[in-house]
Structure formats: structure tokens, C-alpha cells
Length: 379
Image 1 (tube, rainbow, N blue to C red):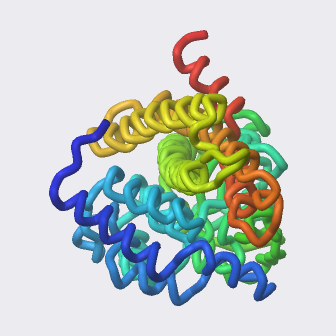
Image 2: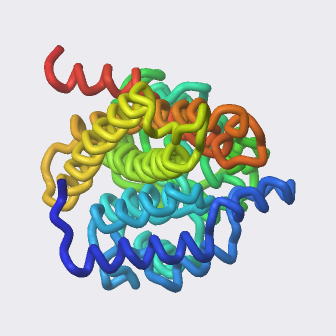
């Protein structure tokens, strides 16, 4: 388990207080029932920017606090507890990581400053099918001429917060064939660029994603993030951060599902007894608690590794695989142990289960990450 500093503890406690008071599960219900098609509440995102959460991993010279990935993971865990819909993951973690890792001074100044203040939404457009497969990107980027820019043609799907994004970090193929890690290039594309068409995708967990089509989208040479044909060197570590950050959010969701269920076990009576006294239910709760503690160790190890530097690929996939497994179990147990009320929309258990299923699939499920982890270990 990570030993938190006083500042990290204060950040976590502030996040817990804000999510409980200002962004409870009822806020997600309101977003869902409004049928607005929005993936998050812009006012909540602006407030996160004001509190400094959008700039936790961004350097101080760009309005951030450079507080580290463990610090941001603590905030993501708390937002996961109450199912907060926000671009914290897509923008403050994933996009900010890519820009920090490979952005030029001009690119950082143009975007990191705005992201840190909650004034811009940015996201990574990587997948093109129903399964996470970053190396299979086929969206074509064709040179307009020697030393000139590029024309982008193709589509991306399930781009989280893609409809609202001011900046799209697009993974395109400048050479090679789908499946090759060589030949990928990352481009910074304004969300309202001519030729960009965005269609809303309503996800089961009431958050939003977008299907984005690029038709002859013209970008300059200065839009390249990193180096041409060598985008994998930027994309892979960025995705590792996405895996671990999402795992932190999922850990918070799983812990909340467990806490709510545990409270129910302590109060619900059946056959004249509190159901928490039934040994079978005690065993199931004990198993879930043990899995939650193991998952926390994996998630925090990955986040600390980003702050320390070095190869974090195996730790990131281990964290995501464990988070997928424990959240799947926690959401199932929440519904089952609540019995009949757990099957109704009036109870929050259904919202937790839906969030679990979407989060499991996002950026690769447990099988994807178990396979990746095994390969990285030489199997």
C-alpha cells in the first residue's frame, strides 16, 4: 500500500468531500434522465479546474501543480466512488500525459495551460473497432507534399468525451500496415476542424463517447505530436497511464459498491436475523474485501511507478486486469446481495453495474491485459 504524504491525504479528502456534496450518484441520474446527449456536466468540469484537479500532473510552468500520478489517481478513485461523469480521465490524465511526454514548447503552451485551468477538453482518438487494439490503427495520414502537412482520412470509434473535445489527439498511420507498431503518427487536430464529423454514442453507463469521421482533414507539419512514423513511442506510455488511471477510477467504483452492500448486510433482516450474520454472505464479502485490497496494491504500484520513471508496461496492465476482475465481482455482488431492490432502477446498484461493464471494455478488458502482461513477462 502507498504511504500518502500529508498533501496527498489532503487532496484525497478534498476530492471525497466534493464528490459527496457536489457530485453524488444523483448527479449522474440527472444527466441520464435529461437526455441531453452530453457526456458530462460542463459546470462540474469547470469547478474541477478551479480546484486544480485538471492540472495535477501538468508542470507548474503550464498552470499545473506537478503533483504526480498517484495524486491524480487518488482524485480519480474518489470520482469513481460516486460515478462522476467528467473529462478528468480523458483530458487531465490521458491527453495531458501525451502532451507532457512528447509535445513541443508551442504545443504545450497552446493546450496544457488551458487543460490545467479546466478551460479545454482533450481526448485520445485511438480505436477503430469494438475492441481495444491500438496497433491496428488504419486511419490514413497522407503527406500533402514534401515538407508540407498531412491529410487525414478514416474514422475512430468510442472516443470518450469526443463530442465535447476541443482537441483530438489522433492516432494515424503514415506507413506500414494495420498491426504494425512502426508507421504510426500522432496528430493534434482541433475538434472543429473542417472535415471532422462527430456522432454521439450513448453508452450503457450514461456517459458519452463519439464516432468521429475524418474526411480530407488538413493538418500542418506542426500538428505532429512526437515524430512521424514513431508515434508508438508516445502512444504506448500514454496508454499505460490511461490503463492505470482508469483502474484507479474502477477501484473507487468497486469500493463504493462494496461499502453500500456492506451497509445493507448490516441492516437488512430476513428470517428474524440480520443477513450479515449468514456465513455464506460473510464469506462472499470477505472474498471481495481481499480482492479489493490486492487490487489497490496493484493500482498504487503502477501510479507510483509513473512518478518514479522506468518501464511501467507490466504494472499498468496488471492494474487494469485486476480492476476489471474486482469491479465485475463487486457490481455483481451488489445486485445479488440486495435481492429484489437491487434489480430496480430506483436503486443505485444498476448504475454501478453499467459503469462496471463500460469501464471493463474501455482501453482493453481483463483478457487483453492478462495477455499483454504475460507477453511482457516472456510467456
